[in-house]
Length: 169
Length: 52
Image 1 (tube, rainbow over the protein chains, first blue to last red):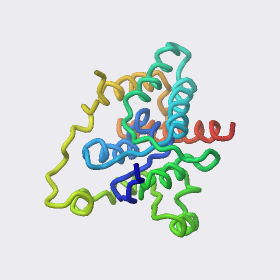
Image 2: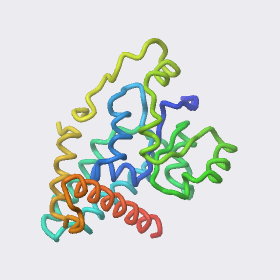
Image 3: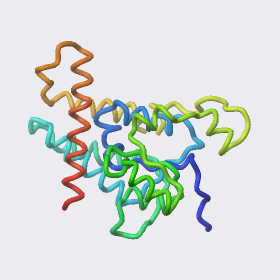
């Protein structure tokens, strides 16, 4: 099967955003709600990236808890892993998991809290190698324009969200 | 089958076992402060995971 074309509807969320979506809400959830609400968008992630997020979820809960119910905390991370719907990619080991997922998965957007990825100088270097923009969740949430994106990747008039962001399973 | 709403509620319950910011002065401050602290905890944890 051939690789898909690069698409602005294909998005990688770094492990910090995936974990913060579940644990913190805020801008991370607002950013990923756009993907949950629109079936024509695609979350792309390698196993390494999902492994990082699952580990961060379990470790963050464990760090913040008072020591009670550790089995339930581990189960939450495992259940998140089962719930998350991401198109798998298999990038080479050693590269940054989010950038490698975007490169191999032809995703044109990476959402991350990591300032080392969102700086202007890094953006310039990345765009020279492949068409991608890296934004913090708040910026992605603000700039996500479903009407124009739908017209570009699907065609026709935007019909509105076609999924319930909270009930998607 | 579990929904995202179910998972978010379980995560919220886990977070409720953590300590609130004593400097926050109203509900909005508490929510904003807890979200900010939560994100910083997540970021720090990811840095540790990727250093290993």
